Every structure is written in structure tokens, then in C-alpha cells.
Length: 205
Image (tube, rainbow, N blue to C red; front, top):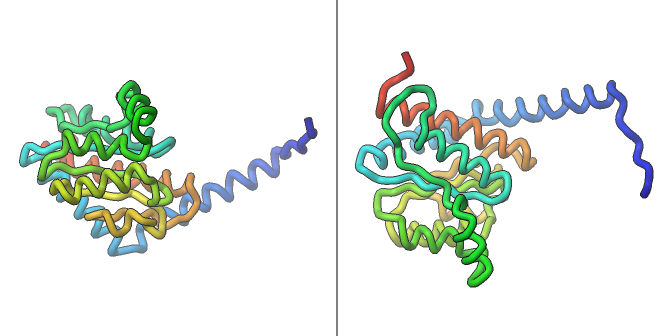
């Protein structure tokens, strides 16, 4: 095995500063983009109306974005800041028996589309997280949602990828670097969760 050179403490510190600067630049990009901030506000309004009308909010993603999807779904079904009633929300990948069976018997590309075909109702919301914006299983799920009247919110990277044209609301993080995009997704997601909760139940004491 080839022996690799290990970074010195000084080099590690320099790289830490670099990564934090990149993170700050991405967050500053959200602050500077008035249209993106308006779309975040629209996502808050849309999800608020969905819950108030008795709808459900679903989340989907792959890999790290699946973890983020599960995280954000739990902020609604559990709580964000305040003790309150349940906001019905779930991440679609959590039933591993379903995911592995459908991926094996049919195709990984339809794991989310099949669920939305069976569960999604007009007035519901599907939030799809994809750093590239090109995840096939999310694209197919968004196509089903368009046909069924389910609102779609796409969390992507800067370009939006193919999800740009399929998302009713596009929240495209101003970065092309996967870790920075995911950090922006959680930041924007937390903002959405906080203000949806506040709209329905009031602010924290």
C-alpha cells in the first residue's frame, strides 16, 4: 500500500478555515438572492396551507440527502421549537423492506414514484432533495405528483438540474459543491420548518 503524506496541524487548520469560508459564501449567496428567499417564503406558505387543509408532507432523497429528508420530516412529525400537535410528515425511504423489494423486483428509479402513486393526494406536498437535481427516482416521483396535483418542492444545487423544470418551487442552493449544497439544504429546511410551525402553532415562548 502506498504511504500517504499526513497533513500537518497547520495544514489542517488552513483547510478548516477554507471549508468554513466556502460554507459562509454559500449562506451569503442565499442572503443575497432575493428571488431564492422569496421562494423559501413561498415554501413556508405552501406547506402551511397543506397542513391546515389536512394534507401531508412527504420527503425523499438519496444517500446523505435521504438522511436530510428524514431529519426534516422529523421536525414536522416531532417538533421544532415548541410542544404541539403532530404535523403529518414522513420520509419515503424509511421502510427498507419496501425499498429493497421494489428496487430488486422492479427498479430503484420507481421507489418514490410508486409510493406517491399510492399515497399522494391532491393538496399534499412532496419535498425532494438532490444535490445534482438529476436523481432519477425523484424525477419520476415529481412526474407522478404533477399528474396527481401534489405540489413539489425541489432542494437542489445551483443549476437545479432536471428538477428545475419539474419543481413547483425550486430551492437551489448557490453552490456546486455537494457538502456545501447539503449544508444549505439543512439551513433552508430548518427555516421552513420553524416558520411553518410558527404559522400553525405560534412562536416559542
